[in-house]
Length: 435
Image (cartoon, rainbow, N blue to C red; front, side, top):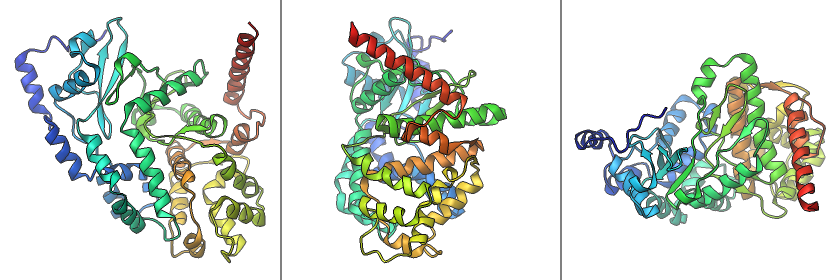
C-alpha cells in the first residue's frame, strides 16, 4: 500500500524538504541549465551512445554533458503543476509525494494517486528550462559551428543540426510526447511482451505529463540479478521493439537509453519516455532502406550505387567500392551471419572503427555524408548495439530483421507470439469494419 505523504507533510518537514533540494527557484534552474549550456547538454545526451568507443578522457568529458539538472524543491515542482493544470495539487491528486522518484534531463518524476485511486507517474518540467534550451536552439549559427568541430568533415553539418534541433525542440513540449506515447500505447496494447503506459490526458499539459505508474526492475538491478535466459529474452524484446517501430510502424523512439526500460518477472518490458521520437516522412524510409539489401548480400557495387542514390555519397566520389562496403557494413556485422553475440568489446571496436579518421577507411569517412533523416536512426543502431553488448545478447538478428523489413517468417518463439498477436489484431479490425 502506498504510504500517504503528500497532505500529511507538516510545515516543519516541508521546510526541511525545501532545504534539501538544490533548485528552489526558477533562477536556480536558469543558472543550472546555463552552467550545462542547455542545448549542448541535450546534444551530449543524444550522442552518449558513442561512449563505448571513446578513450577514457573523452568519456569523462562526455559524462559532464550527460549530468541531469539537480532536483527541484517541492514548492517549485508543485507550482509548475498548478500553473499548468489550473488547480492546486490537493485538488488534482488524492496523494502527492513531494520527493521526486526519478530525474530526467529537463524534468523530474513524482509519484501520485489520482482521485479514483490509480497510481500515476507525473513528469514535471523545470520552469524556464524550455526558454533556456530554445535560446540555444535559436542560435543556429553557433550550433553549426560547434557541431562542425565535433563532426566528420564530410557531414552536412547544417542539415544534421537542423534535424537535431527539430527533435530537441519537440522534447520540450510534453504535449507532443503525450501524443506519441498514447500512440505507442494503443499500438502495442495487448502485446505479449511489449508494454507502454497509458497517458492520463486530463493531468497532462505542456510542462506536465502524467502516465500510469509502472513497477518493474530498472536496468542496473536487472543486469545484476537476471540469469542468462532473462538477459537473452530482454535483448530480443528491446531489439524487436526498435525494429518493429522503425520498419513496421514508421515511427520510432530515438532514445535507446537504459533508464527508459522496466523489466518484469514474466519477461515483458515496459518502455518509457517518448520525448525523442522520429516519424518517417513520405518516402524517407524508402530512400534509406534500399541500401541494406545489397549491403547484407555483400553486393559491393550495388551498395555503392544505392549509397549514391540515397545521398550518402556524391556521384564523383572516386572511392574504392570494397573500402566503402567495409566501412558502411561495420555496424551491420551482426546481420551478416546466421547467429551473433553482441559484446561490449565488439561494440567498442566497431565504434572505434567508425570514428577512426586516420584508419584504412579514412578516405571513405572524409567523403561520406549522412542524410538528416538518418541521424536519429543511426543513434538507434549504435545505441541498441551498446545495450545488447551489455546484455551479451545472442540471437538470429538477421532473421528477426527480415521479419520486420520483408515480412519474413518468425525465427524465434517471441517472433511467433508476436505474429499471433498481430493476426488477432488484424482479425479484430476486419470484424469491426464488417459490423
